[in-house]
Image 1 (cartoon, rainbow, N blue to C red):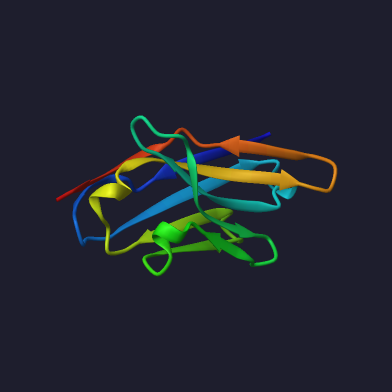
Image 2: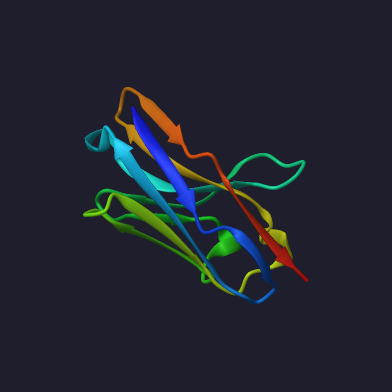
Length: 119
């Protein structure tokens, strides 16, 4: 099992910045990628950014150039630096840890942290 604890959400004005953090514990060696997803009211959960153990990153088109994902492997922590925030970035942000192989994928989720961007 992997446990994920997020921090860093809050209220910010449009154009501002926030940094989310997510610390992983438990079966760390099982993780092959970590990332962030978000879910806005009335919408489905969507990928924001992920980073594999090998360093490959993937971003949603809507956040490219504004958000940056990073990992501190020594601390088993993943970060999401969010700049130039827009009201449409308002959502609950969930930390994700993933184990994937050619046979199976397993996901673990944090409890979520609310990000509210005011206009």
